[in-house]
Image 1 (cartoon, helix red, strand yellow):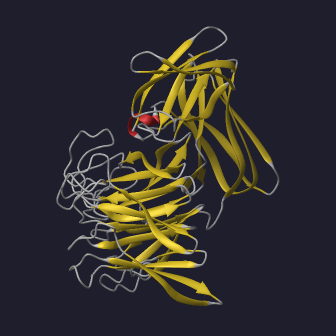
Image 2 (cartoon, rainbow, N blue to C red; image 1 turned 90 degrees about the vertical axis):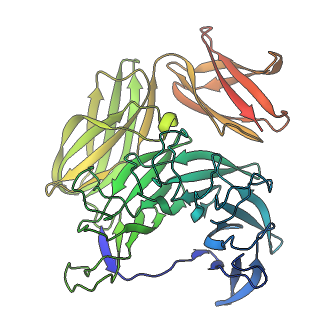
Image 3 (cartoon, rainbow, N blue to C red; image 1 turned 45 degrees about the horizontal axis):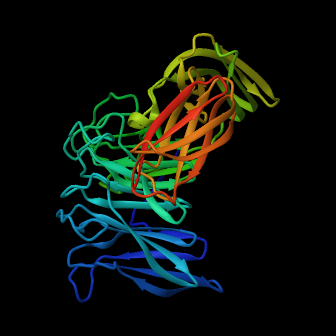
Length: 474
């Protein structure tokens, strides 16, 4: 982790375009706008000004922006209406997707939270990467399931683009959410990783050492279509009211977190009140170069965890960790240590390691490594998902869906399955065969021809075992 001094507002840049926010309209007070710049022959030139299709005074369109390829997302955190233009909720917030077609940026869709409510501040922060966008709602009160109200604990919403339509795929919250943490004040997404800041959080990564508004941030990873919290991070020199997490950015294997009220320089001296700092996390110094990590079921009775390293520096040991919680229920994995394998200390040749979990959980479980240095610092490996147990449909997403749904099947043996789809009246809509692998198989089903309503997906394997799960099309 590296610390760097400085502070300031941010904009989003991708390839040859840049988007800058502008939160004061000319005809409707504070309606807001955003400006697109394009780099031509090394010079950035304004090519277009964009506004919301339903712009209104004090919407603050342009409060946060992000751009990726031919798509941009612009928030209006004080906007009041839903995607259809109704159901007014004061300052519930919204975000707008723009697409570049034939050189022109056009509004493609308006995004709102599935559980929107007044004063949620949805759109306080936004980020977009490929087919995924994330929107923060720092004043939102409910957990991922829509219950357990905690005032301004905050949340973030992840949207996925499927067949040209952006659909809410998941709501995420912090594993240790608390009153006025403001989780989602900042967000960033890149590939299969996302980060959300909670700049008023008081506890460190281990859940202790309380310091008011020291701040923290949370890393989420997309595993089998589900975004799960994999790590909480904080500053090594965290202090009261630093507000670490006020801004965040991620580009694996690196993440950066701003602490705009931090007082000290990179060496921990030269105090300047609220001078500000930023912290870089990732492979700044790599104590272990991990070639791969796998978790593989064997004989449906144990899990073989195996990994290799190319180099090791001051490597004390590897802790093997496991989580049994189904990520789809809360979006949070609760890992426990189940074993330890001694490291090689210092090495510049390939080292191979194996650990067997002789008492694995039935069903879906997750494994990862925590590599620990001699000085106690540690890093995590990617998370691996495994399945042992009864034949079942593990997940269907997005739910409700539109053009497509994705589903994951858990099976000990794999093989051919019969897939059937029924409507609410029990009428068979679809009947076809698919091949699955031992463990977890992910599939996609085209649902564009289905009418809005509730459906049941049923699968039958070669042993005549049945599994079914309900989903909706909107």
